[in-house]
Amino acid sequence: MTPIDALDARILLALDDDPDATTLGLSRELGAARNTVHARLRRLEESGALRAPSRRLDPRALGYELLAFVTLSISQASREDAVAGLARIPEIVEMHAISGEGDLIARVVARDTQHLYTVTSAMLTIDGIARSSTTIVLAEELPSRMGPLLRSLV
Image (cartoon, rainbow, N blue to C red; front, side, top):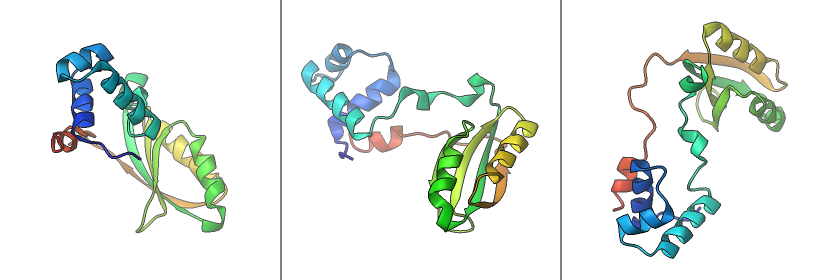
């Protein structure tokens, strides 16, 4: 992934302030050439540094009021199949390999506790999943943010 420099950070912060900003609008606001801003945005997208806009969507807007983290223990011999099976469950919105008590941690959204039970039960039917431990989120104390990191580059 290409490192982000100060101009990239300024572009991204400007997009945080106005997600609908045009390349021309960004170039005027930042005092940078339109072609430069366009090239930077394209490079950020192609490198994977700038993720899809749908990642900004709050799942509650889709009716998924409950957020939980599910720690999974898996059979290492079935790792690929287990991850592929989990990826087919739409309520798993994020998943990471971890060290510690489990092997994977999944960020899971659900409509309510009954729906969460259905989702976690489906997870346990996937080959290679040995066990799970679920933690329900009670309140979001600090939302995901990149602004402070970006401002440290400017």
